[in-house]
Length: 619
Image (cartoon, rainbow, N blue to C red):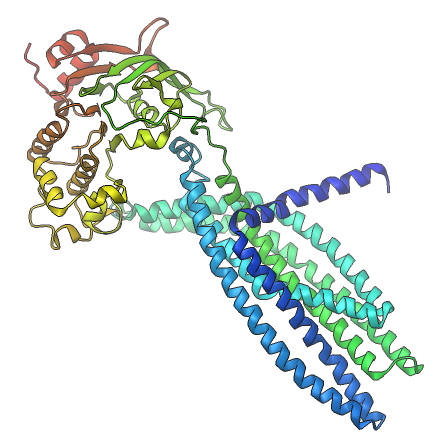
């Protein structure tokens, strides 16, 4: 073997470790806590003792037959008593092992659920938006289920098979080194076959797994958007297209696993040859009078068991290989590096009025700088404006002008490419995120209502201590103050169940839930993305008046304007222009004004939008 061949083998083994065993080790480190590891030790100890006891039985059977042939009553009687004892002791040991398996499963599932939640929610929102193909519900659920399947396979079959294989080989080496050597050679050859097949599966499955992830994303998206699918008359087309996508992925999947299965006959033939060799050697030794029947029975049984356990382990190995691509994808998603983190000694903001200052803020989305070859896209350039305590600021501009990016940067979905956002005089990057989020309430354009009761959704975002102080009377008072009226729709009052995604609420009602929930938090800054877009004109006017009442005092607000009629009562107006249309030296902020009349005179963009919407501004 040349040095180059040796280097190739070592490189292959290293890649094998990093792909398969590196992924499994990560799962062990992340999802198996110390308590579960103690339970696993119990499983291993009692499993080992149970296998040892059960493997004594073939030797006792042969010993009994030797006693009968030799007419030694004491020997065959001792063999019968020993057999009975092995069954009793084995049953007790298996009970303890089964108890340890159940405790391990429960502890691992609890740890798995917690760690996935911790790692998933620890990613900044910008990363979720940027890495949508990995940080998805389907990817998390698939990884969760694959891990559970692997641990069940290992605990309920893999451990016993491995222990039985090791113990049978050791026992064979003790009573017959020749038979043990035969089995050892078989194990080594089988190991190399496994390494080859595992590497093939890991490399070949990556593109296939990516196809299945794409199929799952589309399926989940279409299921979530079933209303659009049906009303668009696309049900048959969706079924056929998803079926065609699945067929395409299935071709690659079958090709891989059919090739993997082709290794099964080779393993079976090698196992048969090993058992046959042990059988021939034992019979030859017995015919020469050098081996007792007890040893012959033990060698035949144990070599056969070794072959059988290799087949069982091959099934466990296949299940692991089937699961590893999903676990690898889960690992890749959950270990994505976060860029928005609290710095050491981050500033803890107090619950007090806030002043926000954007100072020469620029931001470029790098997401397009990937395989599609598109360049990065700049959306903000040297943006500067302020939000004073108690001030309501409207952010106006055409689509693509950077309004949504401003709200994302202010909530630290991500950090600006350059410049500073200062809150209460501190660079936002130096502020403790939890302390900032306690002061901010966000009302998105699309309502995000969770399954549960109306009360659950209204109190979401409040700490347990804060919830204690929020009585039903206070909630109704807030709703009245905001002009929110559900009419007779609340069959059980605040305990009315709203359904998954708030499906039992109309769009306007869901939006009102978000508005009241935000107001109940008593924030120092509200970020409102066209909160009344789903309301009719009458309810919109009532809720707008309610919002202004809530914002009276020292609370600030940043309102994204999609309809100019909703922001005419703001204290300050900031008009943005898209970066793409700017010339060198142009400022992205086209105008800052303190009344609609002033803005109409100074901002061409505002005049054009107002005229398009038919908004009359008295000059």
